[in-house]
Amino acid sequence: MSDARSHELFINGKWRAGGSRATLPVINPATEKVLASVASATVSDLDETLASAECSRKAWSSRPAKERAEILVAAARILATKIEAAARELSAEQGKTIAEATGEYARAVETLEWNGRHAEELSAPIPMGPNRMIVPEPLGVVAAFTPWNYPAVLIARKLAPALAAGCPVILKGAEETPSVAVHIVESLHEAGIPEGVVNLVFGVPVHISRHLLSSPIVKVLTFTGSTAVGKQLATLAANNLQRCILELGGHSPVVVCEDADLAKAIPAISEYKFECAGQSCNAPSRILVARSLYEQFLSRMTEAARKIRIGQPDDPATEMGPMANARRIEAMQRLTKDAVDRGARIETGGTRLDGPGFYWPPTILTGVPKDARVLHEEPFGPILTVAPFDTLEEAIEEANATEYGLAAYFFTDAADTQRKLTNSLSAGAVSVNYLKGVSADAPYGGIKQSGYGYEGGEQGVRSFQILKMVNGLSSFG
Image (tube, rainbow, N blue to C red):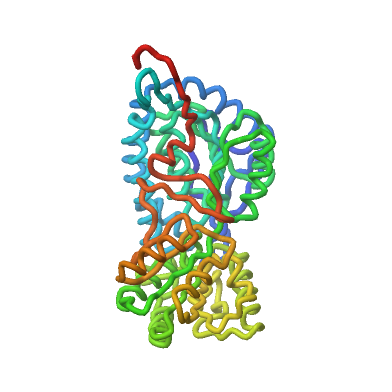
């Protein structure tokens, strides 16, 4: 078991250091100081991980779904007892507030439990008429690559359905937030997951991905992260025709119609946008406002952004902590400068805060020209652009004007407008008068350059299954 300062690999049911004993530093984004270290896997470690997962595959896939379900539910209950301490570690590693980290762990518990409670029914044969049925079977060993922004939720959304389906998993945790993967894997271990069914590795991402995906043992790749990295992994996976589930970047529009209730819209947008310092693929990033409401909306939205309390993530009064790393600060500086150089105006924010820590304030840009990078490159931070529109058709065209298609939001109570926007916005998920995270029972996936495949709900489990068609049986037996 890892301690609070040195996080280890978990291979074939045992915690241990990497073969070379090399480690990587874990940086506290609020102080810029080293918080902990994490083991870095060698090629030999990865080979052992692959062998361990493959050795466990037949026994785990043939284990009754009821027993797999019981382990997942037990792991959820064990993880629930760890939330208070685990949330503090996540907050220190990633920079999100304690309240945000606690809420994220609660969603991870919900995800483990939901998949456990539905494992039996989603593993059962599906009648298709006389003498015909579909038999769900596990695809095989899964390589799961998870990011640092919402590590608890996204690890659970990959591990839980794969395990429920009967697939062993090699989890590549985020080196920036290793404690999360450790706590979730520990919970599964304490719940009785057999040796080899779940393995955890950390290390140099490109080395790990190349080695794991070059192996014919791996049958499924599941990844959440940037579009650029997703394309690289999909290219590697193509050599072995590994099934891919890719949740990639987003650049979510919000259409605020002339009948929108700003008293509801502005707090909803502000809360969801600036959660996790805007480091979410689902976060709204481009606000399009009916011209009749534009000045009022901009004034109130700017005021809301300025009132957000920025501070140490473990301070209960803090509403937004630091960004996760120096790379995100550099991206905010580059996108803001590019927009301003092209003629955009900064309504609030726009410069890094003084002092230690990767702090960037809520930033609102207006008058942003259409060729500015911030309108086409995923901001992945606390930057919002706000622009007016004159017709709904204009708003729809602008909302769909990026290569991304993960999420879209709009505010209106008019039924006809709701139908038109729902049918016209190009996104895997569309929300009406509502901005919240995805629940465990809902399938979620992007279109265009935001990826393909589904996580969550029944479709999330099916992603790890072969749906074998069986014809001519005299009975279902």
